[in-house]
Image (cartoon, rainbow, N blue to C red; front, side, top):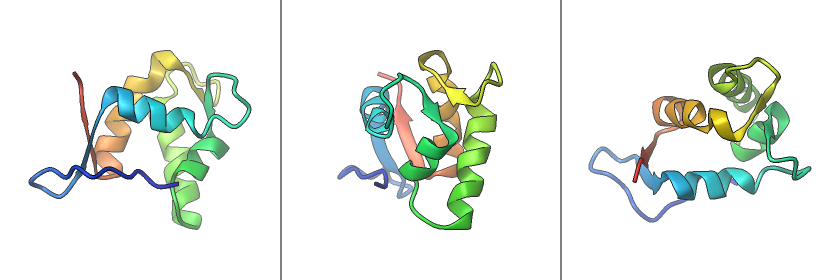
Length: 93
């Protein structure tokens, strides 16, 4: 499931609030452990080998403690990654 939003910014990026981003991200928490694994992140982004690369890079960029998961305390790191590499503008409301 790709990031979908009806709102677009002037530069063409999809716009969502931090809460919308977190809610979207939680839909990929397949085992409901409150964390996002590399595999779960890959499922969040459509595509082939490039998706696997983005998933690995997203985890590396956001995973501050190096345990291989994105936890609630690391979501802001993933927000930065999404804004930089996924063409999403996330509003910190």
